[in-house]
Length: 358
Image (cartoon, rainbow, N blue to C red; front, side, top):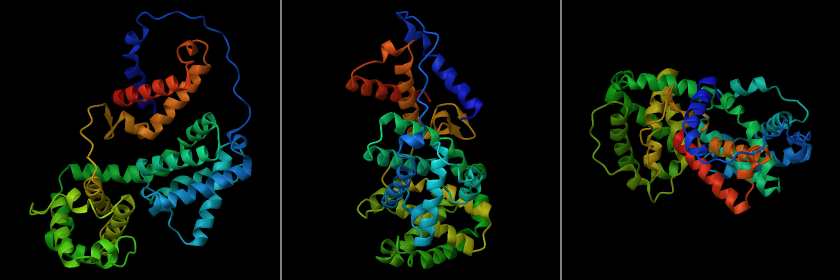
């Protein structure tokens, strides 16, 4: 996290000092603590064999998970290369032999549109794989904490381009609508999209059922979404899609194909990003999720503190690590050495409190 975000975090937590310290009991403070184990996470997870198995199982589950599937569907040769590089990267970052240049991470992912949502999904998958492999909870937490700083390298491309596009969109969609060629240009764009989408095995089943009707409805809706006349009179998107089995994987495919159509129409990258920013909120409507309410927390670069810390997934990892440290610290462990059930309850409440505070 950047220094500004850390300062905001400390300031927010400081406001709770008085409530926490009322009627507190004093405890002796030891000068030193037991040194942490010298054994690396790489060794704790089983060395080269353990990391190779982690990558194999993670990749398999990423292909099954609708949140990440679109990023991992590759031909066999590409899959083999990706797995090899992931194993080299994880082995090095976890304390094993360094055979991967981490400077390649950012340029490699810059154009992939990997967001915090996708990064959290991968961490979630890794957590599950490690848990299934029998890794100790603390080792799992340590591994996830080591991976957290990688977030910036993996998501920077998406974040930078989307933030620039978002600022342009906030000025009004009328200019974007004009640059797309107005209603006529978007109608032509929809023709190109349907030519691509109806041959895409990921989503063609949804587009071919009643092609002409679906195309007409989508065109009117997207014209409106991209700054055109408000003429859509159809059903709510959630109602339209609720029984179709549409998930994140399908919506990612839709965005990818729409992006290809925009590129094929000769539009510039900046305009394509603005269109993607405008369409992304539709995901929640299509998948039957509620759009996030306006956040009242401190904002910076369009993001609240929680989002700048990596979202709920990162916060959960922070709470887990923090609790482990609290139990080890002789100054405060009296308050946290509890039965397992009680510990889970405390962790959950800590997470809930911090999530609300941030």
